[in-house]
Image (cartoon, rainbow, N blue to C red; front, side):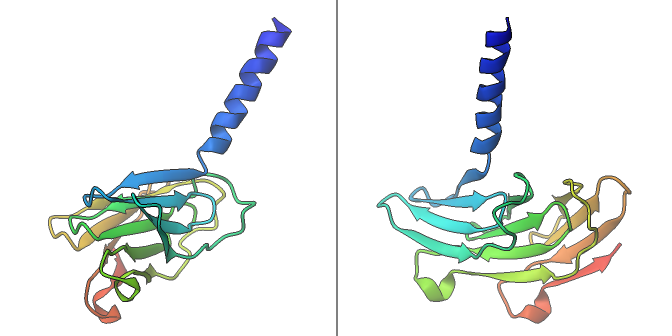
Length: 159
């Protein structure tokens, strides 16, 4: 019985470790986004084996898994990257047009919490550019907007 429990514990721990990298299938069937959920690093992975950096790592590798998550927008080229611990947000854009079209931009530079657990989530609004950021522990809410235009069109406000 002890041997069975040890085997189960080893399998369970490797399953947790495997959750560090998450693949998101894009609407462009030849591209996926690979997120390191510990560091926030996002790569565009193409079917031909090429990979391109979309968003550089934010936190050190020693962070807990499942800190970051990508949310799909209605625009096939843009995703929202959320730090579930702090509430920070980035717009991540991948592209097949070239490096000048592939980047990320900060939407919310402020830490809304210093928690060590994931308590933030986002929900879309009617407009494809606007979402709610929700603190699931306190119920606090913010409305934010991403944009394909300049930075002045990206904002967040307490709701």
